[in-house]
Image 1 (tube, helix red, strand yellow):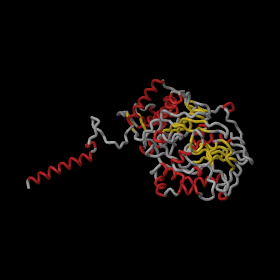
Image 2 (spheres, one colour):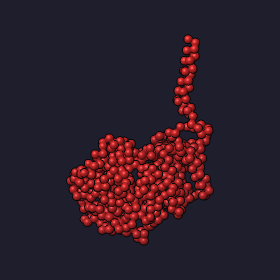
Image 3 (cartoon, rainbow, N blue to C red):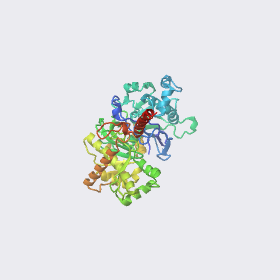
Image 4 (tube, rainbow, N blue to C red):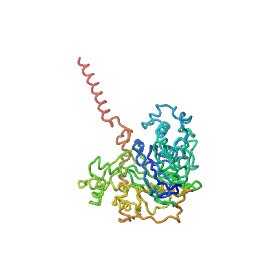
Length: 513
């Protein structure tokens, strides 16, 4: 799959996995009125629901044969600030301005502490080396390379105004980030530049290939699922779950704990489309937890067989809030619980409950989206590694009470980046207009239980979620009358009682001496 490269060289789609911006609950940043926030599937602030920063090497995937005309597209793991490369050959005044903020603050930011400014500065310093490497690989590096990003990736930096589609001076000032160091923001589908391979790689096979598509990973999956109409939605099942719903050309501000973000902008002169987004912290990660921590299963495939063998959780509910709850609750004090256990509950029921937990969490986000948009979703399109679990997909349809549609093409993120690249002006090897799109081969899972049973199970799940909240708290424990007691802390109680006994004993001894 490719676009119109000038010399018929082979295409390479590049998926870039880089450092992440930490996400906060929207209520904690109400003064950052223009910003959209997002949670990514594998990197979050642990205190605010996540697992910290991590990076992964660049992966290249051949998309076409060597004789096909091509172009390049990139799908960036969102919350990264990487696109192409910085323009200067050496650190300029902007870089010195940033670096001179103090090594202590930057170091503190790298550890995950410190101020928001320190954390963002640390992220920039960490990204700088990756930017240089990408620049050399893609468009010539510091020797005339292109320093740009697209609207979907820019919206993850906490510096972007999703309404004006440009860097926001107020936010940049708040974080003390010089605007001159930021890349130029462009659409998700246009020719940004031509590939120019650096001398270190000793390869000219990609020289001259236009780079014409750039999308964040979840936005690329939305495009790959062809969710171009207002009201269409997709859910990606990975380590976590990420559900995006297209809201059209107008951003919808959520009143139910969701995030408003830029979905895509497929052309320089095309309008931007927005989306509501909700994220689940633990989806595929619960499988790994059952395997590594409890030893219930040996492989992920075994989970489906084990759960299918019982076909029910037998009233057991599993809330995997290991580091809090994401959307729509944003509850960092929540912790994981397994409840509804009886003497008949066994590991197979727990395995079934774990799969149900993924589906229930998706239902909560979908309910919030339906309330925000006012239009119930008619079907959910799905992708990601966990969609190979057919039992999970059937459970999802049963719990949502709507069909779940799984495309035959599993790599929707890479497909979305390629679609954006091929439709760019100057490439135009295909069209993304609705009337030009063809039907995609897919598998549909229809609900197989009645709505009453689905609602009963969902109500029990909501009850379990309430039990998981406010578990991790620093507030003192109150007595039955709602008053705080000094004896609510056992060590403190022993200390006070022991001190009183020692005083009484000392007076007694003094009186008889």
